[in-house]
Image 1 (tube, rainbow, N blue to C red):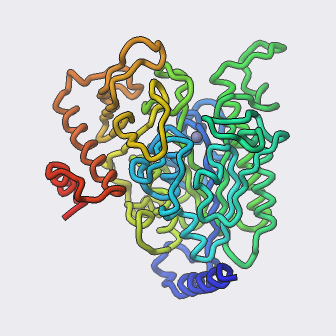
Image 2: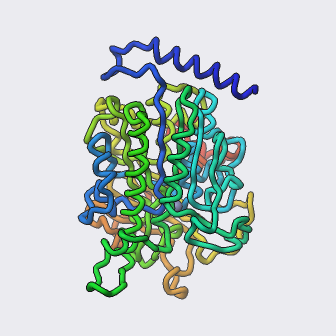
Image 3: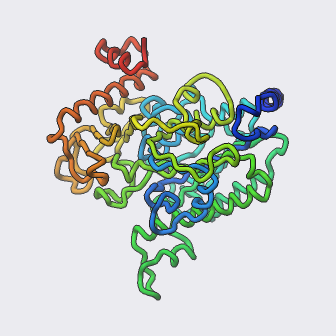
Length: 473
Ligand SMILES: [Zn+2]
């Protein structure tokens, strides 16, 4: 009862604010109704395997159509090549090093404010359907959602098992296929409270291994001779993306049918990419190369986001939540309100900063002993910075994940302009550039680790670094 009264009150305030705002300041008329928000995350989807971002095989015809109505991002980066850390960053606008969920199976702390919590407290009904046990509410991802569907039934899933990473899976099913997730999401839309705006978060898991595309996608992407049931790994992966795109098409059709399309901010985003053995590693979670972290991102809101536009400068998923709240004119305090947003670029009033550094990290499960919650992971993680056309990766010396024998370099520098596929480590050729990148990376680590610890624990050198970045006075 207390909650619903608060919701009514805050909704009334929001409505008042929207009605009274000066329409002439907007490029288009703002609806008197607060906009709905549909956030869709695509698990394990590489940006360069989406046709709406230029891939030669038409994996995403529905997203291509949606892109005509919105803005596509050419350089969007997940903070981590792993589901949990990346979603936690989207929800909190904190890097994994700061929110602490640096690997799957850890829990997002209650003390962090999530996008769903902010929207719920502003009168939104908040609902979600997730498609993998990785995002189960037990790991803290349901914070702020009034309805959180993490029910994985055997008849709807692909991967079955009694436990994952030592954690029991109550239903014995790890995931849910996209068609079932879509049905559930559409039911949520249909049963929504029509008196309030809705924030709906839908997570699709299908492009994640194992690649088991259903028909007709399987046949459509098969390159084998007719009559042979053969599908290359890449074709099977592409077929899963196409299947997911088809599901999004159905969801968008339901949105149209319900009359919500005109006043809904739609965000489609990947949580991380997939190796596909480009650097030897078949899946994700281990490496920080481009294929593991560059993700699809598409934002549409008719009349507000410039149609058929392309955002070409680097964007971090850390900025996603603040951008949504900025577009909705919701103000507040905390990480979700602090990052530079994409709003100007989306509204055609400017460009993203071409010199923005992108920070990446992974708590690689390879060659690491079992970890314990609350433990200091930083000594075992790989970090990277992508900045001004260069990429610097730094991690502990370790056994190569592919051969299990040779030691791989703990540091790598790539000239992304000359070598976009990151084939040649030029660390010894450009030691000054490597040092510059390392310094910036270390300053970032000190700044964001500080969000969890007290400033008193920083050395004078670290504090100087923070001052140079403008984090402390
Ligand atoms: Zn994922």
